[in-house]
Length: 145
Image (cartoon, rainbow, N blue to C red):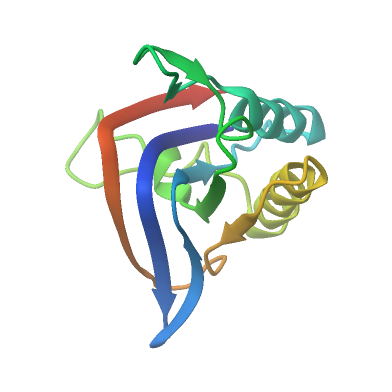
């Protein structure tokens, strides 16, 4: 599994003119499922997202997690994170999981986050979306399980 994680002041995703997910302060996460990923990868990703200390404490150091600050997480599935642009001019997506496996593991990450009592909003799996966020920092990380 691959993720791009951004600390945000707010984030929103729309599909077909409707708001699919929206949060205030927290984490905006693009997540992509690879062919070899399992529920173990989903558990790793959820645990890391809940506990990653990338929010500032009173001294201004990244010492608090989204859970510590009472933030939310907006997760959008994005298979293009598994795109390979090394050859040619068109990305290859051979490493990305098939839709059924990807959706199952994407939903698993969301449910595991919710089990921690954190609001977990989501985009529309496989849908065309308009996304927007106000980055806080900016603070951006890439994570692989």
